[in-house]
Length: 190
Image 1 (spheres, one colour):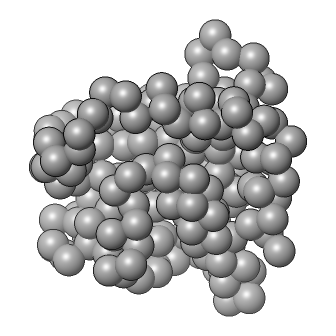
Image 2: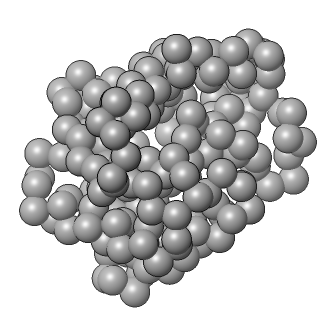
């Protein structure tokens, strides 16, 4: 399922979608960074929204549209709002994430949806930029991931050790090393 709020050519949209889906298959699912993604990917329950908005207020409006879509379409498990332009700088992107989380609360969606963040230059607080663990949140393009909190809670309830997921992912990424993970990420564009 794909939706776009963009005037970019269809071929460009398709390339962005393909890179995003390849990243999901190769890194998120392939490396099992999210043990719940495979089921939703296979069931085609992930909605992809691509926008070429470059202004924060326009992206936040697009985010609100996606919350409303989730309200109306229960067959969508999760949404990836892909932002190929305007938020390439990680610090600007983090400001957007902060505003998105504030908007989630203001719109009354706290406890209903959750916003997760992915960016090509993602770097955890107090981590070195070259730490391979950052690849657990590195994506081909900046994106905001909207999750249904009730479905996330159910999935975590059925996982044998949900608290260990982040540490397991970081250890796996560090064992693979920066170069191997960067090669995988860049291969998403091919």
